Length: 71
Image (cartoon, rainbow, N blue to C red):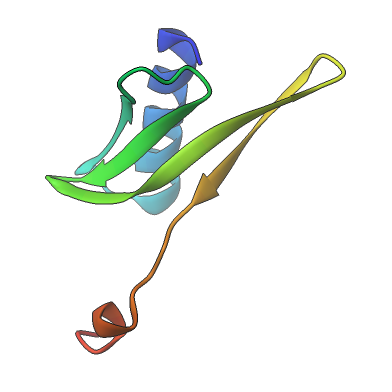
């Protein structure tokens, strides 16, 4: 992912979820994905998919059963 794509994804996540605390950051030593944080809390990974010249992104977030008890 390019730095420009990461900036666009950061703006997109903040806009869609209405939360300025969200941050999309590059991953160390990885170029096909980046990480999503809310403040210091890691939320998930955005993966880049390239197929026949088309680029798309997919967001993966694991939710632990103990996290559901806090809702």
